[in-house]
Length: 128
Image 1 (cartoon, rainbow, N blue to C red):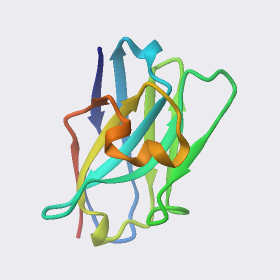
Image 2: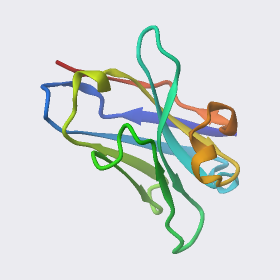
Image 3: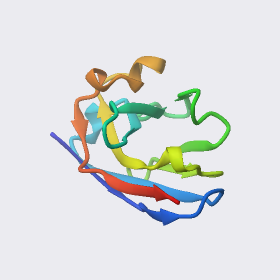
Image 4: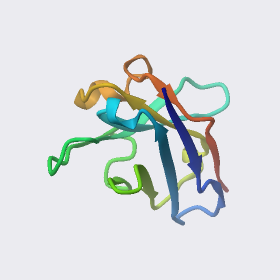
């Protein structure tokens, strides 16, 4: 089993930046992608960014069109963590942000909820 813990959420003004982190523990060797999702009240969960992990020097990422150019996902292999750097934040970015992990890498498929096996509890991001 894999445990995921998010951190870094908060309240920011429009146009500001925020960095989220997700620390993984447990059977992390069984995961090959980690992703960020978000869910705003009354809306469906949306995948925003994914990154390949446990892949040596191979570095693959995938972004939803809604965040491309504004959000950057990165990984720290030694710390078994993934971060999401968010810039130019807008009120529409307000949501609960979740970290997820999957037992495979699938590019765009990583941004489908059903592709992921493990989920964190979420961290709230509010843009006013």
